[in-house]
Image 1: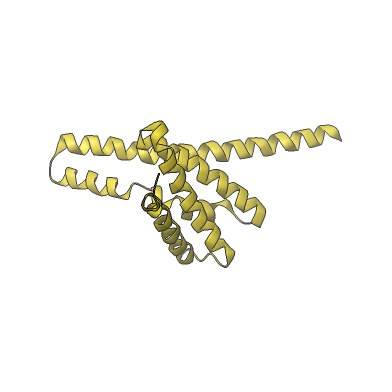
Image 2: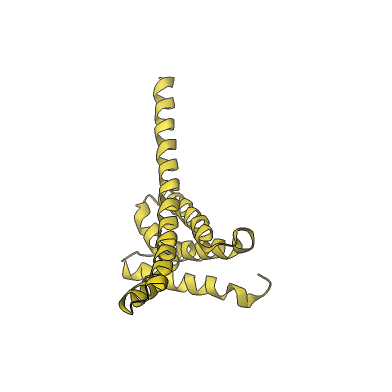
Length: 153
């Protein structure tokens, strides 16, 4: 990422997530927090490209970053994680892949349909696994912390 031109998608993700935050009735500083989460996710997606060279693994990394960010912001602001996570993950959702998968299915292009379907499911699965990993880790940490506090009494 040598130029400012390479960072344009990060700005667009920020603006798009800000718009979605307004649609989802998030108020005040929450809009900027959600927008920054989307930009952070897209930045991590772009920065992991030279290392991972697979958009599915890049999506996994970005989902982990967004989920961790959303968990932290939810704790700081004492708000539900879902709002931050849902808005910030929008730029990574494979909408184009879903569209082209259905287009190939309607046109009877079976080989292209199967290839597109598997790739789209891989990206969607990476999003789900990234969110699940962070959510499970946070939940396990909370249980561990609760148990240690009970043992100290």
